[in-house]
Image (cartoon, rainbow, N blue to C red; front, side, top):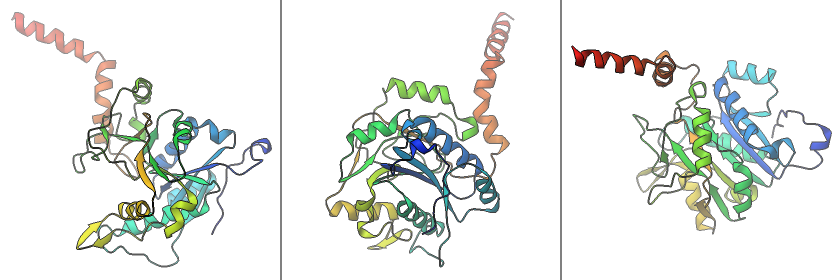
Length: 292
């Protein structure tokens, strides 16, 4: 197991191993790597005081990301499979993704691990709230918030809301106001998401970790995370939502090298129109038309 390239903390803050290890998997996007590192560190004072750690798992990173990480001050570890891994069904790349998550769990220093997607934003002080409620047999998930995606829709257990489609267009103030209000409720019959999840390291690894990609079960293609969580629940673990409103925003776009001009413009036009007071201009023109 390769060691994590760790961002150095003052000696006074590394007297003991961290209690919680948080990590996200990235493979090509510098924007997402930078952003997830920033939002997790900003929302977790436990990282600064040494009670938690955050690192990235660079899954077979593309050259630009690999070079950027090597020059950055971020904590990260690379994952390179010893041999090619393939899934029984579904997208072949997922085999490497699940293997990278297993790699991160093995590398984690904490007794408790939190696995994240790279395209996520947590609510403030989320970690402390999850720690307070967490039980040893839990697969504990926060409340997911997603914009509607034209291809994938919204996860069945998610709250639908749009705070931007990418790190560059993320509406930080609106998101923080949404979190402070805490008024959004989970849809009826919601199932907890598989990411993010908080789990004890030893409990997660008792069956070896995620399988290598999606599996064929009775002729049906079952996602690897669902298959593995079902297996853990059969051993007495419980996959559940945290009771308190701890939100995670999911861009639902995955990693992209660059953002298209179209996406930036479509996300930015409403705020740009407000800044230019185009709404008032349109209202004035409508009044002139009515008078004429």
